Amino acid sequence: MDVEFYLEDILGKDVDLVMKSALKPHIGENILREVNYL
Image 1 (cartoon, one colour):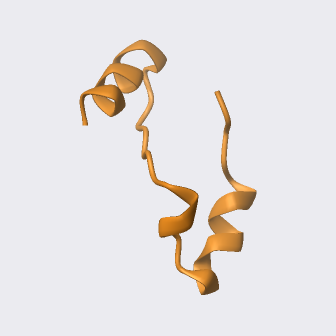
Image 2: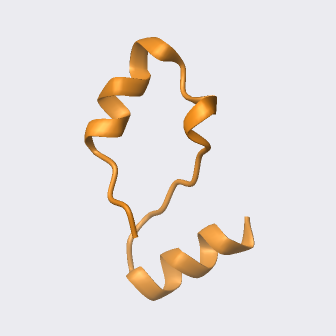
């Protein structure tokens, strides 16, 4: 996850990268409400 670590370094925040299709239906909606697209 080099991209994830790179983004954490330049943003100074924790970053989680996931594919939308990998989200489970019962929690996916909650997660997508909190997404910050860059």
